[in-house]
Length: 153
Image 1 (cartoon, rainbow, N blue to C red):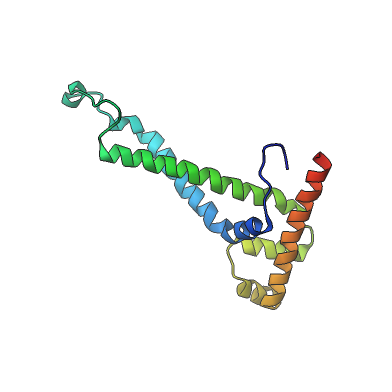
Image 2 (cartoon, rainbow, N blue to C red):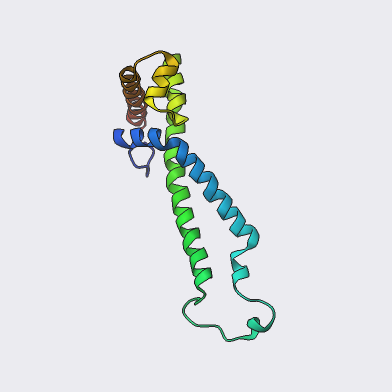
């Protein structure tokens, strides 16, 4: 790992592989929401013109519950985006370590969110065999990053 990066565990890689498809979908939804908020402008919630612009402003915070909720959602979206982005990037950086065509095919379908039963049926292999291959894929992703870490140290 590079300095300042957190080492990723086997369980985290397995979970990221399992969640990859919906994390990408969630990232897309949150990015669209953030872009929409930027386009509409969060500051537009604060009156700048008309009668309300001349009214006294409260000190210490904004009392508008709608504006507060928009800010809360933006903070949540930013947190989610950063966390999912880190996990997705971690998987994407490790995909290159999978070199066998069959493993690449199985990894592709796992990342597409297909079940082990579906992949097994599609590839004419047992579900159990697909699970074993997934374990080897995770091992390869871990081993390669460990060997890179040793080279950097």
